[in-house]
Image 1 (cartoon, rainbow, N blue to C red):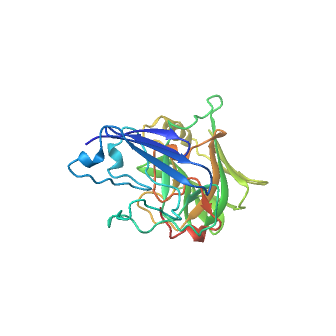
Image 2 (image 1 turned 60 degrees about the horizontal axis):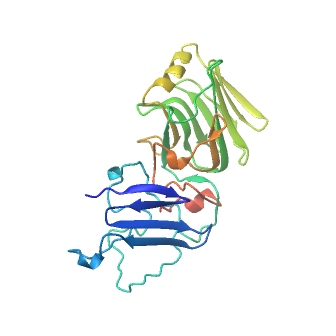
Image 3 (image 1 turned 90 degrees about the horizontal axis):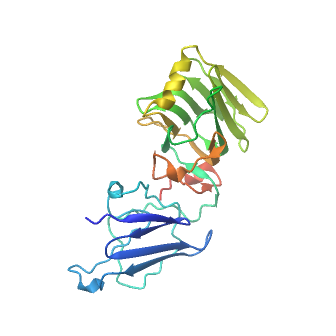
Length: 286
């Protein structure tokens, strides 16, 4: 099988194979998307099976066959299509549960219920060393339901440190110990500051402090050196969650994290847009 290479151009991926080159351009928000395909090694009609397949919002082969990592989920909706060949047919295997174009959207990152993303702690900005400190900032625009919002841990133990959405509150907990909650005010940045003795959760003038036990320092430092150390967003693996939320940004150590560079993420996450209300995006995938 021929494995394509890929390069980033604006908000599109260009693919190159031995026999075919593609170029993708986007003129702007809500404007026309143009895909150019160019045959570079002879006419297609001379092939044993002269059939061209075009996939929108996905790949025609497993993503694991790519030389570079890519989550092939298109954060877009298809308002209208115009095929030059009237005999072109949509495959019966193609998904028909596409995102609804009539939904009013805004910039952001939307997590429908049950979706999640993971960042390796070794791939994001590192904590300060002297004294040890680490900060996370979340711009919460929308939130509904109950379930995990954020966690630091490993795939085997996602409960080392976590934030949960519950009844329009953010619940902060450490391991199996008692937690604390903070009323959620949408539109204000939610900030976490960790040091060797405590966790500070704040949003606007509201602040809560969770003291860490003395033995927690070793676990905290080991988490960043652990090869499986993770920053989790959204639902935990294998756990049901009704929480949905929209972020207008995510920052670690005052540096914005790119959701397209996550170690892994659910394909139903809207990486560049949010519905005007969480319920509008609950039953849509793309």
